[in-house]
Amino acid sequence: MLKLSNIARSLKEDIPLIKTEDRLSRNLKTAELETELTSQLAKMASRRVDANTVLCLDLSDIRKEYAKKMEYLLRYTTAALEKWHAGYWLCDVTGAEVNGSESSHSIRSCNSAVHFGPVTSHNQ
Image (cartoon, rainbow, N blue to C red; front, side, top):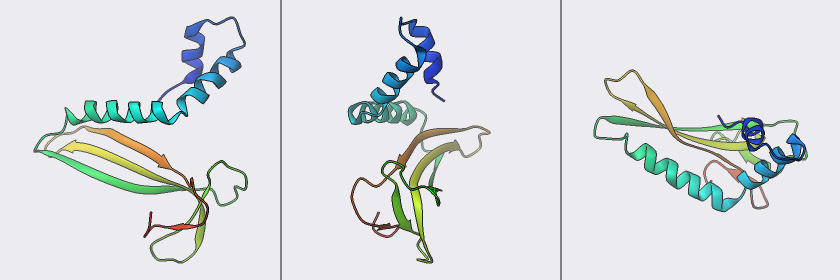
């Protein structure tokens, strides 16, 4: 887990801590940084994957039923098409050895709506 407040404190800048945290948070949102971090994380994780590694793909969601003004909030329906939800899609890939006792998260992402209109799990 990344704690921006710890990183901001370690920088020992002559500005309020919250300003440093805000700047770090803004910088983490850049697409270029996300692309580079994802690429590097995938390379690190791939070194731990071999013929005996089981990869589990978990497609989940975070529902924000009462949210009105959250950035890039997605409107989607489940495969059963029973009702519409507001929230974000998650994708998590976990690797584990067949006879091992450890598991390690290798890739995790939270996906949102960057386009207009509702999206179903069928066309995502």
